[in-house]
Image (cartoon, rainbow, N blue to C red):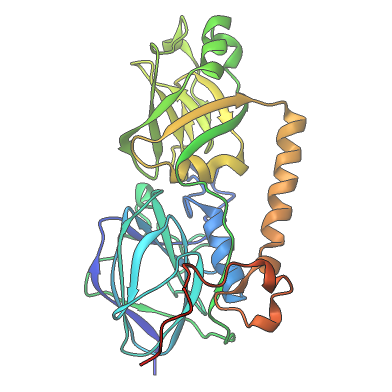
Length: 337
């Protein structure tokens, strides 16, 4: 019998996503893939499998029913979630028995949550990937009534969680100089690195608009900038002077001047910044950016070692006596009934 996850209710931005399609930029197709690629790796670590196709949920999830016993993992932006009547932990793996319903509500922080299944979701492979690339017309959003086929699962373990550092509330992003950084006046570059920004409500898988605390940014002769290759992380200064950070489904060429580029290790933070989040930027050298990339890859490779049981047996807790096991107090003079 075909393993499946049945969608009874779908949020407005549900798509199947994997790592995307590298290698097609010369043909006008950006990589695409998950907005938060770290969340993909976290799901794989929790389920003990290689990166597989996951369900990306923008802003809110939906109502899902297991057509067979399924292992699931929930990563990315925390969302309110229940399996039938039981609240479930985020950044963790769980068993979803056949017939059980998983109800995922709105994000409590961040922007994109991810639902993973043991064996991964199956979808037609197009140009080397199974992810939807809406801008290019590849794939589509998932609607209510869809039956998502699930691949064969060779694993068995659930009930594991990952400690996850906060990347869901904004923060400071590291950037390197871009091709047009030198076009901007020194006072604008200094202000860019000093002032704060607010994540605008206008954002999608193509890019995120930011509102600066001060005035807009721009260069003389901006309209004469030659259209050339661009990539996720590039920060374009649009006609009204507001920075626009390009994301997974950005175009492959553009003529707006780019003041800087967010390094890959910090793209999950800008992807997960909710509307109204506060952001700032810090220029780093290329050597610092490469060191950050090395640390980023080492962190991802080590994720499986950091997964731990949601419930731990007392014998597995070496510092058990150092934990607060009971809250409150008793006078000791009451009697059991």
